[in-house]
Length: 112
Image (spheres, rainbow, N blue to C red):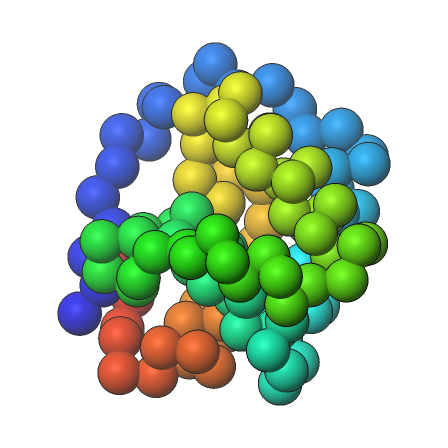
């Protein structure tokens, strides 16, 4: 079981996600829902952001599987994560995260 425990106030200091980064994140989520090597890379990146300990980390060599647009999107989102102490459910719908877990980590279950 993937247990998620975090302080609900940790997003208080987060900067709002700008439109360019929101678009990049949306493209990564859409890519992650497909079924290619690039999709797995996008999913691994997003799931590592959610909970690397339970859902696995992100291997930087997976960037080699991405085209320039997807790699740029990942860099854009990574820069946002580096500047803001937030989990992805602060900037995306939890249902999207759950869908990624079901698709790519079917042996895991999310718990609050």
